[in-house]
Image (cartoon, rainbow, N blue to C red):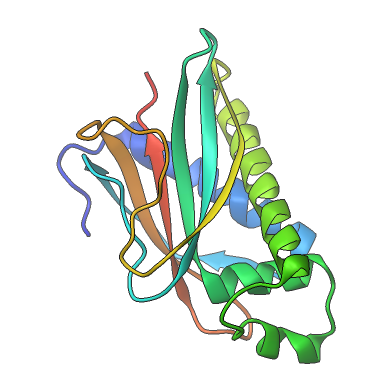
Length: 187
């Protein structure tokens, strides 16, 4: 996915600010750096799907000063979301590699994944404030497991424009993975 001619400098600034806060806040709380490469950004008229494997969709609610609400999402491959949950819960190092390969999270990891969603929502809220978008606020709207190639379920008018960023991330010592960030276009 390449930068589309309909993307704007504002899109790139918004995405960069959000990714900076998400990676910084998660890295601080997980005790492990979340390294992100430069994002590929486009404007799209459909919700994006995570490729090739199960993903967790962290839904984010965006509310403006008039109370209008739009939803976006951050898609993270399941093994990497489970790794983040394990790190957040400070599981021993020898359990990380094993737990990230489990086919589904147990109750403890589900709770950790939900908390990761709350951290992502808070990071995005901080990014919006730092970027001067004080007329918008953000918070976690929960999470959802998605089969490969499945688009996340959230309140969305089909054909409405979204800002979609795909970015490669890495948490050492595990393999790189792709995050997909979908944002409503700020008014």
